Length: 595
Image (cartoon, rainbow, N blue to C red):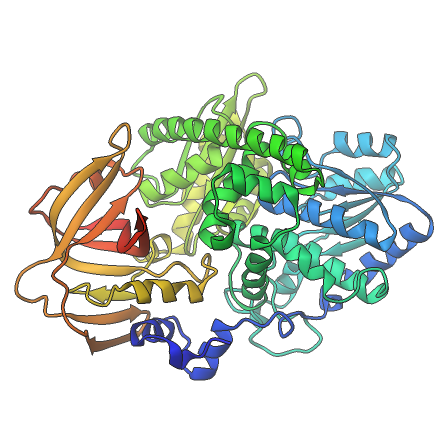
């Protein structure tokens, strides 16, 4: 167990700045307890009905089809249930929609195809909560449904034997939970934490089945599923607090020793050191490769990879995903550049679309547009033959995409998502009207756009005038704060008014840059402040650094590349350790630069 007293003063001050002020709070944060946050799954809405319908399917030897989704969350949730449900005596198959043929979520064509193929029961993961029209169609065919999802529900739930979605409780009891969906008004009859991802909800279904059929999957064996849960929890941008923190933390432990040939092959293909897998590996290396299947081909490739027991098949599929991921990078950069040229600087919400932009990468392009324009952003692909535009959106702060979609639902053909990400389909003739409606909705919120930027960019944990405390021991200790992600971002430090001592461009096209940074002037005696919210403190550094700090920006924009030796600026960095020929040194990954 990690004791707060064993941490360096700077590390503990960062914890305090993040709201973990007492020793007990720090102890709980540093040592997330799987058992303590393994909440009773039957407190989730619809769980009892879901388990009983699956028990009936087991008794009647019915064919159960898992209806998944094409992102990391949907793929891992599908794989998790393909792994677990047969252990409870269920006959299971799966279906994941094709992004280009089916679009997001459930659709009538797929339901009819599954019904004609002999499905007796369809079990959704990571989708279905707003698919009332499709569930009514399924009911008309006499096909039973269990919906498991984590997206925000509407007033009326879809027709199904059971609807399991933690956010139903948030809808019905909005004052009981905080902004991260942690219960603040204690009620032992309500689930304590609601921000599970789709794979997390699927995992809770397994936990409920374990209580119903305890001999089929002995307690503790479910932990081997946590590698999949960690992948989804980190990649799906849910809050890494409370139960999610424990699931992700221990899931990373399982991931490092995973039994799945597919995950081992994927890590090998990506050049990942399995012993050092962390949230950055998941979010920036494994997740994009899994997503590449659904973006450029079909997500069944990723499901087959994660579920195969054959090492040779795993190697072949991992290599395919690696190639798809390389193709994805080129497409997204091209579309993002074209999208940025189309942006209207006067709009509070960016909405841009291009003819036949690849639908599989418009979401990633929207992320780049969002960070560049510093505004909520939608990027869309126009299909002029159908007269439709499919758009993917990214947002931050108090402008919720899910709520914006609800507000403008009458103008949409389809839509759904989270606060931070979502997708819509709009008639081409209605695109301008919908764009204006988004602007009106933004205006109605009366937000301070400058103030909202604190949600888009990482806020510094530490403000430094010197880098003497950025030691190897300190940077190593930061791993104890893992996993990083939503509600627990990577630690960042602000180097205030530093000078660029040296500059070196890197990469084939000079797209990366490495700066050497030194303190400026005589005022760099070595004090720092920990800055987070209302907390600030000052301590004396042990000594003062005279060595320059290397700071690197990958795929830097023109502004980041523009600094030259002698320039002075404030740099926001994520500290990391650089290894070169067996030597280790501290360097910073540049988040942003301010004059």
